[in-house]
Amino acid sequence: MNIDTMAFTPGAALAGGALIGLAAAVFVLFNGRIAGISGILGGLLKPRRGDIGWRLAFIGGLIGAPMIYSVVWRLPDIHIGASPLTLIIAGLIVGFGTRIGSGCTSGHGVCGISRLSPRSIVATLTFMAMGFITVFLVRHL
Figure 1 (spheres, one colour):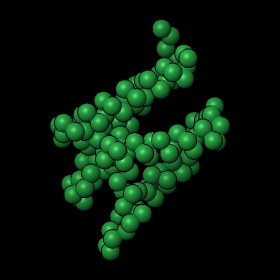
Figure 2: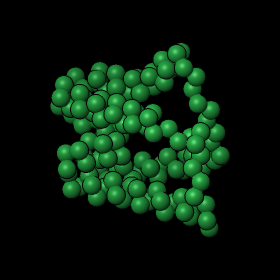
Figure 3: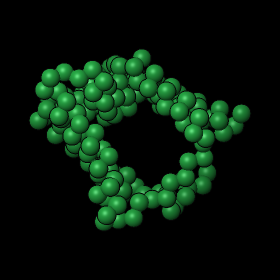
Figure 4: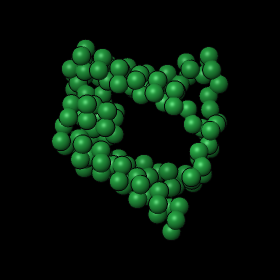
């Protein structure tokens, strides 16, 4: 096994994970809601009165944070080796999976597991297993 030492950044990964955990904890403390991206975005599809502003602010933060970051530091180079059609199909499959699983990796994996939710533990294990299987099939078959 080879580890790409240029891409191996445990300090940055630890800091990023800590910030995600802190953000999820602050969000639930101040808003009383789980920071699940699919649920937050999905709530904009059928908006309720008084429920739009915080959702837009959250999504705006997800989009705006990398823009602010890019002002101070250089963004990493991104190479996507899949066609636009493959990306669209993959996105639809992921969206379908989040509906079946009643949430996404941020809601189940970050927030649900930290609350020791059995449903979230099973959902996260399922997400991970499907990811492992997909990578194996794409790379080896």
